[in-house]
Image (cartoon, rainbow, N blue to C red; front, side, top):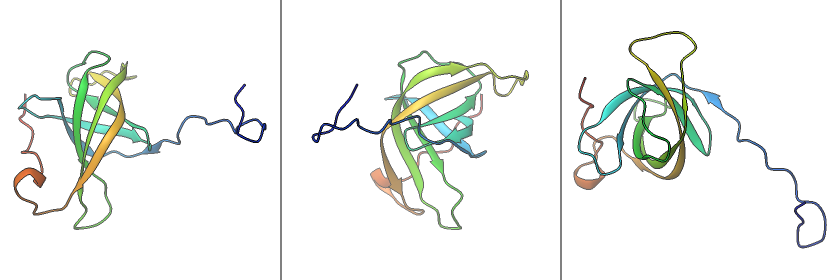
Length: 127
């Protein structure tokens, strides 16, 4: 049982609410040069579930890039995290063979038109 400084039970902190978001994303193992493409299934303040062509091992450190659909000049979001779970699709789909649940450890926004280290990653290579 957890307690606050005043001796009362701390409120239960449950799973973060998920929001369906069917948007493309790019991902790569941390330090890799090549980006791959996937599709977001849902997102929360603590992580993202997305579909991808190939499964990755749990605990793989990843970099993920996507844009939230917030307008014409929406910034990209670059995240770092790790795979905490793999998911098999309910329906067979050759394009999306695996789902990855990834925690978001850190992130930064990248404005459209940024250059140098603040630029968006190059478009993912098709497999």
